[in-house]
Length: 262
Ligand code: UDP
Image: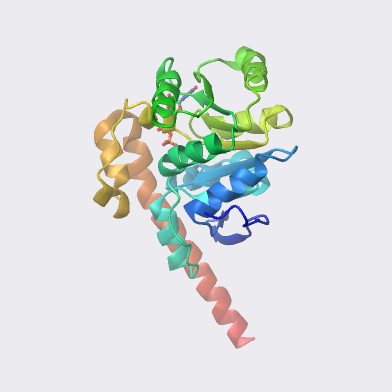
């Protein structure tokens, strides 16, 4: 990645079931984040996958929030496939689990302090320790994600005290989006939602083999790890997502045919 590149806001390339998604690569996303991390305003990025899009279908607040982000990127392979079936080629999946460590390396190179917020007690601290081991220059502070409504002020002042430029919020959907929305004015230059990222970075969960990731089967691996919590999300959610995309495709085709007739 060349430091000479400058980035304008990523345009919306596709709407998957109404949710805007940008066409960005992993490297481009990191470049944009580094640039945003030096500005006085707050930029929010959300990695969208089938689960987020399913939630947004029934949650007007989440749907509206996804319109207010700087951009949303395709965290899930299913979003890349869905966009393609709707006629838009996204350059690649930007899995937040890949983006996290790569961004921490890049942030360390710029002396940009990072904050991990979320996960069960001890998990984000362990994730931060592992990342510091991996990238010795990284400045990372952390707090767990079970602070309750009353704990937000304390968390926010700790984020400020660290001089945080890049904040990862991993509270799960839609709690993380709601929290960001509620505290947006008090947040650092870059905020990313990251779901269970700290569970992976801490080593508490092992990532799916590369072949499963590339084949869009990471969900199956996760289902095997946490069947009780994730059964509904994937076994009900995946077919619901496919059905929504099929509906959208049919609507687009009908609209296209109408335009041709007119
Ligand atoms: N979590 C949290 N606070 C809460 C609820 C959840 O910090 O009040 C954390 C939880 O410990 C887990 C993450 O949020 O680390 C949710 O992960 P999930 O697997 O649902 O996210 P995904 O990666 O699928 O988006």
